[in-house]
Image (spheres, rainbow, N blue to C red):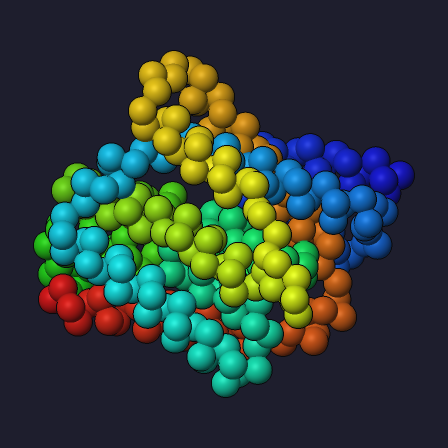
Length: 300
């Protein structure tokens, strides 16, 4: 009966948001014993890679590079700065190296999508992946409701708010939501700068392969799905792929991502949560507040 219930939740996860799927999986892990733990970990690994490749078909290289010089400069500085500061603070807080790296990646680039792409590259286990996703998703949801009122309180222009939202909110969907609630110009700026920021998944993945792919004299394994992700993005940019097909691929990749995050969340153990504690949450909050205030100081 438990196995049937698990399978129902797994396939139903395709119909909800990635964040909802993740938290459903975590709740399942806290209440029940996982009936397919070993198989789940294997399936989640490959399903995640397929989902990431599918997300590449939703990215257009030209649109991403059309962001203004100011947005591009902010992106470069913020991504590099957040990754460096995040790893340093994570070390001071005694957060594991991979967990700190994943939280920093999600904060620096584009939330769950970045973590999904980076996790298999650094060979993070399901516990590290699920904890980092939970931290980033929670803060991301909070930002969607906090940012617009703060923007109005500070009398920010449409362009200022769009830039702030794109740089300080993790996930693309929440960036779009916050920008849309503030105004049409804010939405345009936020979306464009966010696309540029999301492109950093590619160089960060390649750097991550070098940083985490060596153990002793072993060479870093080739992460083929990153190559396929790049090919997918280039295909979407330069080939005339029918819109209905792109929509189907996008829908499928988001469904796979949600199903994957359910599997990852359901593999989280109570003992792991107790062992991890509040330090990863503190790291995520510190990075989120830091990048929010730094961008505010620069643009105001």
